[in-house]
Length: 89
Image (cartoon, rainbow, N blue to C red):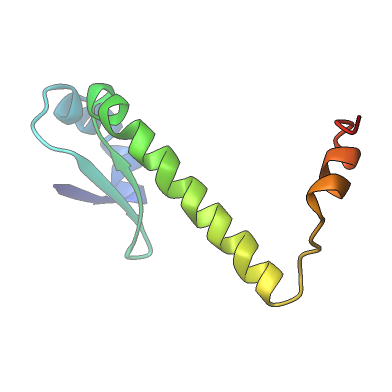
């Protein structure tokens, strides 16, 4: 994988896109030495997208659970939640 700083990426944008388009390499972009983004062919992204969505959903669920454990999230019973969503009968 090729790495560029964000400044280098701005200066070499066309070269980066051509590299990815030709499938020569994925490209990692860093800011202040920290990785912030990866550029990869759209076909590769389409292949991993579902796994990525599942991963992000898991992170969000864990964040909500941790906030609830710490007393920062309010919990509702199922009947209260259904009533709040207008699904009560």
